[in-house]
Length: 204
Image (tube, rainbow, N blue to C red; front, side, top):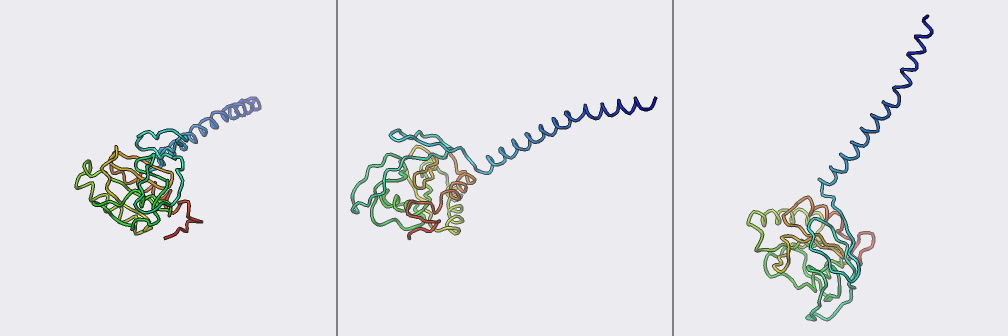
């Protein structure tokens, strides 16, 4: 009489295995989803490639990979028409701008493009839309970033559609707020990656 009972217990244990594996699979999916959401919260954003010959949309919060407009040197004073605003590549003057902070009197685009060729990250802000507190926040963040790697410029630019724009060679991200997480993520991703950089070693 006892042997049939043992057989029933064994069947019961075997039948519970699919349920255990199913619960494990659900937990694994939940963990993966949690990691993805956590990464998004840490400043990882969607990246999109803008096709050659098309206009980049003014989409905020997305890193745009933009077509290369070349990197030819032209004589200082020569006006260059860039397809993107702010520019991310193209012909430029032989002398780059000094790395640093430009809350007023920003350098010409033709100089700043040269800075991006040398692996720089540019943080542009629209003065008419940023408050005093936001300006202070930007300066504090810029100071911290430039202490890590000096190839950084914080510069005012009234002629753009968004409050903040981040640019590096062939890449741009537009922001409608001073999002420190997004700014740092962009900086970490693209600093020292200009076309003249080799193994993150760039010209001065």
